Image (cartoon, rainbow, N blue to C red; front, top):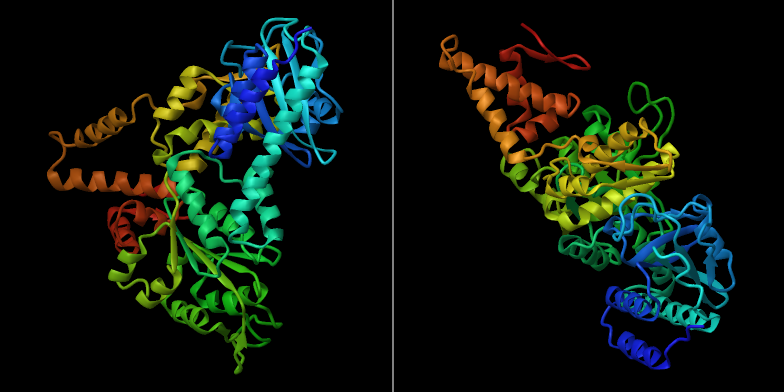
Length: 525
């Protein structure tokens, strides 16, 4: 039997004591385990309810960090969480392996191999797992149970220490009840999680934690598809108002005639169609938070009334003479440049300054290159659950394509690309149940810069013997407007922003060029 080296145990303890943060502590733990046990892959996962979240990996594809494993869908992991001590699976175990196709040491599905797991207990409760894999069958048969129990105890203590350190870091800003909630959200809980390890994402997370505990009004800016709504939800979840409602309203969908009523409510008979009294969004969000999405779309007439609420906390429902006091934290979001909107007279300067007490800019995905594969892993796991696929994985050429693409549609575009590619790949099932997504399934351009240049060259080629300059210019403008309006599903405001022009001017130009929209984009002769 192979016994655990006591000298190595001392080295591990000293090494972990010198770790400066949780990521460093986890990586050192896994490195120490690989010193003690010869293996090809090892992973540390945190458990929250029935969900396992990878916290650190070695020997596995980086996309694994973005995956989330529901115990009900992974019987091996479920057995480990139910075990009272370290468990070694038979080499020929027929239970599906959650890491099939994801080991760096081997491409494709796993052959007969050695696999074991260590349930990590704290206060008689499982808080996580360590999984260890070796491509050599029988690798773990000579390891003594005492050795495995020591490694499990050391790993459990490391994870428990990391969670406690997280609580201590946060407790300086928030009460202990909020600390526990933050720990779950930050490390273990799936859904509404900000995934990313890039410098830009770390900065964003730090900004959110800094402002969340205050009652400051927050203005979230960023391109379409970067996740501004997710940031708003995170700010609310980490705030002292987390047990109160978060009310969401899309300002772009508010007709100007009903915007005031939607925000502040109305009495019965206040206007045609007001057949009963109705509370507004501010009243519904009392003591909680109100998320004003696309706040840059608010009509000027409503902006002045919103300013009053931010200044005094008073609202006046339509049809009422008396004002009401509300206690609401406002979180606003926009993909517009509000400073430019102020200069153009389309947005009130005083309201802009009231909203931007604490501005947060969400980075575009092109500035988060190292996060692309983590997010892809998250969407692969999510899509495999939706489609009932045992395992989805990326080939090397697909990973390269994802990393080299500039993602103009940001995280939303990445999710759609993964979903489409998975659906197409699923049409060609494999005997093993492991489906690999290659570059062709992703349908991403090989060289965006070259593609953009070719597209522009095609447009300029319109100028030939049959076109004078005016005609060619009109055709080019038609193409640009039709493309922009089509890409945003007929939203003229979005199209105007994409083309960096005023919406009214864009509509007038479209009419002049013979372009109209009737539920869909059409080009008239």
